[in-house]
Length: 193
Image 1 (cartoon, helix red, strand yellow):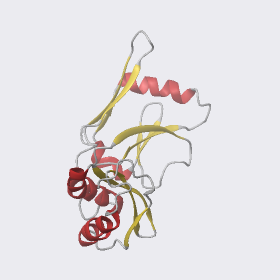
Image 2: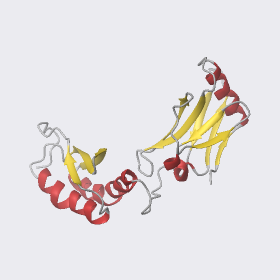
Image 3: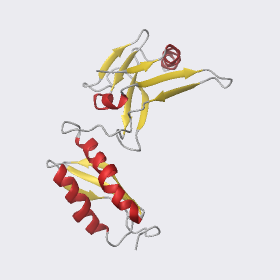
Image 4: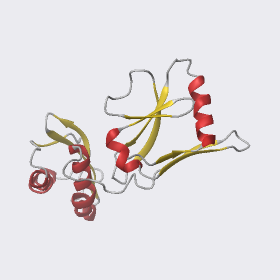
């Protein structure tokens, strides 16, 4: 069930933005990028006819349609979109208190489960060396990872990848085929030695 509030002032503001697009049937699409992680961002984008996903939840407002990304709905719970006028015109604000909270289970998309493990189990260990790893993309069942901080250019990164990161992810996400590293390790300026 969707529990998102778009205030009247925000709806009026959004209608004004949509009208400027000169596109019949244009609406908005709301989603959370990197949901359940410290990097989570709640986004609102234009959604021209046919641009939304089949799984999106559609909510009809008085003057526009809003499409909510299915995978983001749990992270959008209790979200509020508001618009406050000021002397510079005004500001649209989006508050989504649950966007960064881990909210994964066995039915969550594989990207969400990987991000949850990276941020909650793997990165705390890498942080002791100033390192961090993040999911870049999924490629045919493989998690494509990028290392940063002290891990970038570190001579032990291949062991960390295979014995630490890949082992942990494969144990907890059995359908994962493996991991790949796309980090440029020739930059050793921050490497942990």
